[in-house]
Amino acid sequence: MAASHFAFIYLLLLLPFSALKAQTFASVPDTAVADVIPEYPGGVQEFFKYISKKFKTPASAGKSLYQGSVLVTMIVDQDGRVIVDSLNYGRMAFYSKKADEALKIKAHNEVDTEIRRMFSSMPNWRPGSIDGRPIRVKYTMPLRISFQ
Figure 1 (cartoon, one colour):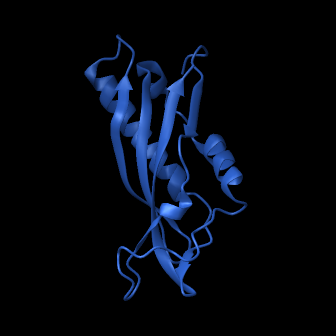
Figure 2 (cartoon, one colour; figure 1 turned 45 degrees about the horizontal axis):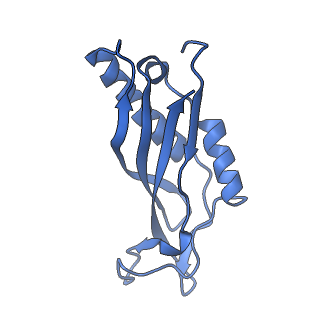
Figure 3 (cartoon, helix red, strand yellow; figure 1 turned 180 degrees about the vertical axis):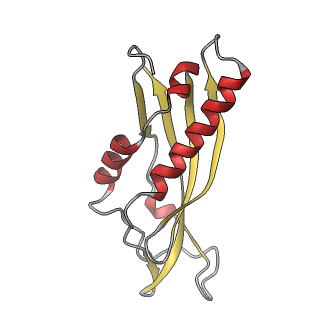
């Protein structure tokens, strides 16, 4: 990536945790709300630090100025493992007039791979629970990628 490009990635919104939706665990309904929500080791600030430190911007994204917000839907499983459920790129765009179709495809694929790698290599969270039983909890959060 050119030295003039500086990748900046951050989460636009991690909260509200109180609005989390728990996924099915045994007989727990999909609409249940966790009594105890999952927590990243060290809390929210450590989660932000992890994202900032671990996301490696692909050179193709810098060259094509592929930036905007990716909606990341992840599940914190009963054992605290993080699973990427889906990525929505509806708010991402290419801002380089020199980016051809091949570069755009490469940038999109590499950003997708990097987000999935970063979340799947994340340390286990403390899982959410209902009545003391661990449950799966789904989060959706925007992840902002920009070049300054």
